[in-house]
Image (cartoon, rainbow, N blue to C red):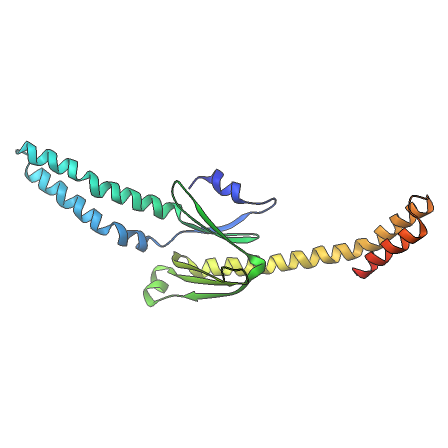
Amino acid sequence: MATNYLEGLLGDNERILMKTHQHWFVLFNKIFLEIILIVIIIAVSLYAYFYYPIALAGLALVLVPLAGMLKDIAVWRNQAYLVTTRRVIQIAGVLSKDVVDSSLEKVNDVKLSQSFLGRIFGYGDVEILTASELGVNLFHQIADPVEFKTEMLNAKERLGFEEIGMMAHAVEDIPTMIDKLDVLRRKGVLSEAEFQQKKAELLAKM
């Protein structure tokens, strides 16, 4: 997947914290039969080496499962799941793209499901419950699901701390802003009524 495309999805000061795909088991499931067909066709073509029409037909026929396998690999590589400092992003599509965002602020709960084999080989389902209209996002059989869930929850917690910090900073700035308004009042830029109105609005935010 093109790095420039991913960077184009990010907002100001937004960073990618983790990127994963569906586990390679998912890809292997899709291309297993195609690999078998390719091997069989090549074996038959080599066996029929001295019968040129059959050999040439076999080499031409191998392009069909080969094209299918390359398509499945491209689809798998371009389906990605990302955690950023603000969102969880799901991307799919090779030429045309489908992008689904879930804001970390709207994530209410995260459910992780792993089978016995999933725990051994490192894959599982991550279900994200959000307050948006989509409601539920299911990431099926992704690689490193535990790390993905942990990174997402940590990013959500950091985001909450940043919001609290911004609010606290804003509250600390209110007395300074009132002082600046008072200077404008004394200079005649603001009337007494305008000053009192602005002052009341700022004090209400504390």
